[in-house]
Length: 68
View 1 (cartoon, one colour):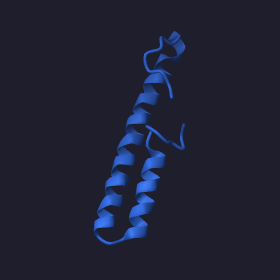
View 2: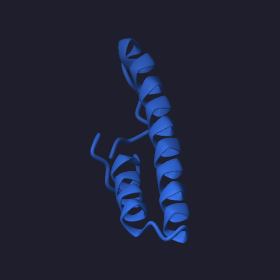
View 3: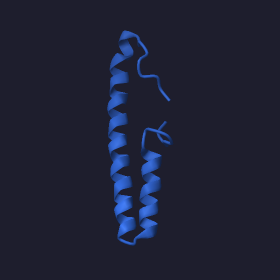
């Protein structure tokens, strides 16, 4: 995991800021996928719900992430 409060050289400061936006966008997508999976489970669509929850956990920036 990346340290957030590291002083970066001047040329890399904009790059770190962009990664914070990417982390936020991945977090929002992960939340949407997990909530959709839970809704699918309540609608008795077990396989689809489990797939959405697992994909949401893989996409999210915290914990397990396929992008880090």
